[in-house]
Image (cartoon, rainbow, N blue to C red; front, side):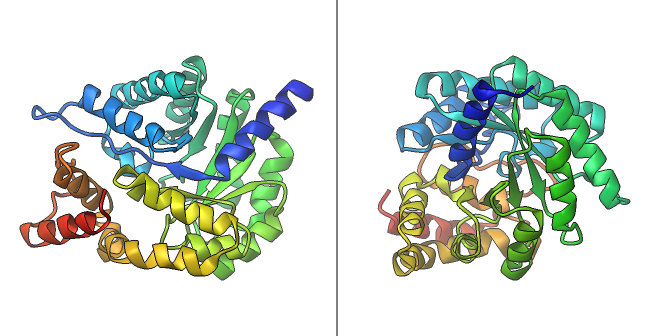
Length: 308
């Protein structure tokens, strides 16, 4: 599927990736089910706050802890809110290949604009197999933009270049290996201008990745303080790195808490902050955990300092 209409649509989607790409949390009700109304309100708070790109079923949304039915529900709820706000929706898909393909087709059928393919979770990932996996998903939804989520430091940029040659709808990459030099080399080997480069490790890494080629970044913090994330984006777009680092310093401790112990409390800290604001329950699903009592006051104090 090619032609001017498709090229124009992908242009719009590329622009949406060069932005704050918000990863909404998935709130749970007291009975443990997805809290639908709360989810709608949280997404609406994002869009009302100026966020225009949403990734339901991302890691901050506890993708791997949701059932297939719940992942479809979250996608559908997001699309309903996106219809109200005009937001672009990038749906997270993954797991085994048939499940990933089915989820991508569901995303397409409910009107989503793009899919983000989670890093394949498998003990034996070959580079050729990585290309085959992503190609199968991309080929199943040629109408949608496709964004691989790259967490494998051993993957070479040439393999993404190969995938891009095979699949013109692979338009961006969410790069989440904590090494700015490796990212700079990977992006240039893959094609710096061929793909939109999204810094996949959020605000803490955004300035360093931006300096070497990223034009967007993902965020879980944006659930709590949209204006903080958007202020970093504005500073980076204008090339004002001192201003970007002022934001970085404001959110540094929050992001360090999320990243500690191999990101054990990545989602937990975000939900704790939302709970401190009275916006959702703090509960997460195993293997995540509720934040220990001694950390809750610290998170509440950080949020208070942001004057939300």
